Amino acid sequence: MHNQSRSKYNSHLIKLIVALIVAGGLGYFARQVFMPASMGTYGHYRGDDIVDQLNVPIRLQTNESCFQCHRPIRQIHKEGIHNSVSCEICHGPFGDHIQDGKKVGVLPVKKGKEITQLCLRCHNKVIQARPRKSIKMIGLPEHLEQKGVRVDHTCDQCHMVHDPLLWINQAKRMMGIKEAI
Amino acid sequence: MIDIKKEIERDRRAFIKKVLGGSIAGSLLLVLPAGAVDIAEQIPGMREEKAVFTAKRFAFVVDITACIGCGSCCVADKAEYNVPDGHYRTWVERYIIDDHDNVFVDCPDGGLHGYIRAREGLPHPTRDTFFVPKLCNMCEKPSCVQVCPVGATYQTKDGFVLVDKTRCVGCSYCIQACPYSVRFISPATHTAEKCTWCYHRVRKGLLPACVEVCPVHARKFGDLNDKNSEVYKILHEPHVISVLKPDMGNKPALHYVGLRREVV
Image (cartoon, rainbow over the protein chains, first blue to last red):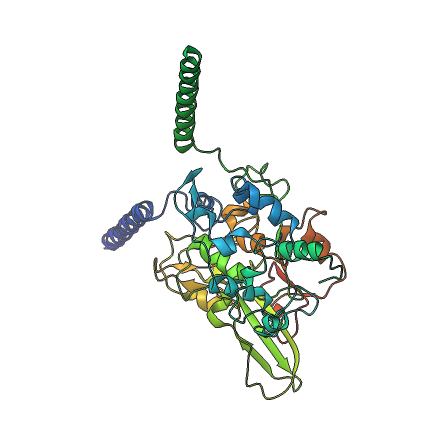
């Protein structure tokens, strides 16, 4: 009697152990199938993603990258007060123009009112919140009226966009005007 | 007569030589890559770092007293990552505080097209007004990483919090967890996306795109282990420096110079 109950008990235990092993095996199999290989290399994430993140293409470069080919503008831009302005903000990203050292597209040239719009991004006087001691602020059309030109003039008709004071200073020198702008 | 013929003959030869040479050189220029664009290292010692994780401690400093709100950073960011319309990895908010201490904040198109109009209809005269550029805070204790159920968002040993696009299931837990609202679900991939401080650029020794294009140098990025770096100097000198929502305990690595208490 005693032995019988004992054997019965054992069979239950064996069934339980077998079920656990099978479940564990299935779990392990599922883990192997569904978990990426590099998961947990450095922490609870896919280690290979670091490489994926590194391979995101660089689309924006520096002004120096543009100047490697566009030499003449380099001198003007570097000597002017706009030397901290990035080429790519007005002209578009380097990646749309050059890829792997080859020209792949032409960047659009801004014209007329688009140029005024670009200038006003930084130089618009009516926008509150600009620090007081910073770049020169301009109100339109007051500035045009004050300078005695037509109010439909665009900025680039007087200011060379890559060095805004280049022509102004040249004209002043020619006219012998000495006062600061 | 013979002399002239000889002369013409020579000229012709020279001309043909020049044309041939020119066309060969020209076609070579098209075929050969014009030398990989070699940009000087902008983060000192970055290109020597070959290990998976750098030994650097990066910090980002935004100078609110310098920002003019031109939105160049937003343009650069959108161009670098082709960020879908209506979503922003970085944006610039305009704060206007009147003399009754009412705070007015606006941010048309995330500042992507700059600020075109003045804020009108304010009941009282303005007391204080400034721009606040926002981006990922790269928290030392990121709550987004903690809540991610699939290990898609993680923190590298050198402090970057990144999103693995292939793991993300788009459950948006991280978007709710982020105290700074820097995350969004990309409509293209249906996965979480956010500013990475331009991890791919930084690891190649370049500055983040927004730092590179800022015309007034309001955004600064560098290594705190390097005592000559600008961010080290700013954080170790007497400035009014603060982080956003310090009470959340996330310990951001993004610091603001001249941050007002009204900014959230």
